[in-house]
Image 1: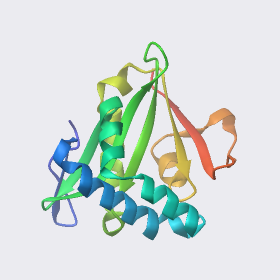
Image 2: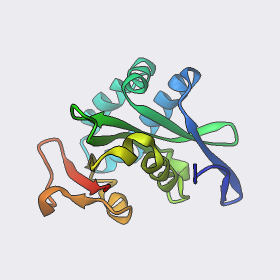
Image 3: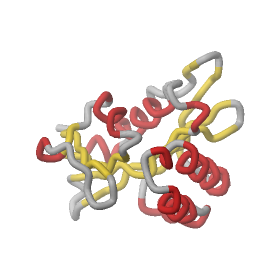
Length: 168
């Protein structure tokens, strides 16, 4: 995997697949990110509701249906993301649950996550990959080569942008 063992800001970061023992730490990291970063763009009560939904059990369920990755540094999980099949034949995939710890944003964690997901076998076999981007993250995805579905940069009823990337 091209993202293993790189250093950013003097910290060694590496990407690996999710392990069962990661679930609680990931849930806490995701909750912290939603409440510190995403709530700037969304209603606080709604962010609390969404954050409460990211419990350890939900993380385990995501890992059952997706290839879930974590970015680690100094013994801590500082980022996560998953790719899951979408469609009967696996010809499309969806990127879900992408989060970078607030203290590590701007340090290459998000890029490491996306690179790991794009190296994943499911991603590589897909013709198209799509994702729902928050107001907070859509510019990051643009930089990573994702475009707005049908060229329409508009928020849906949940405050998300629908984005995609052709793989083949």
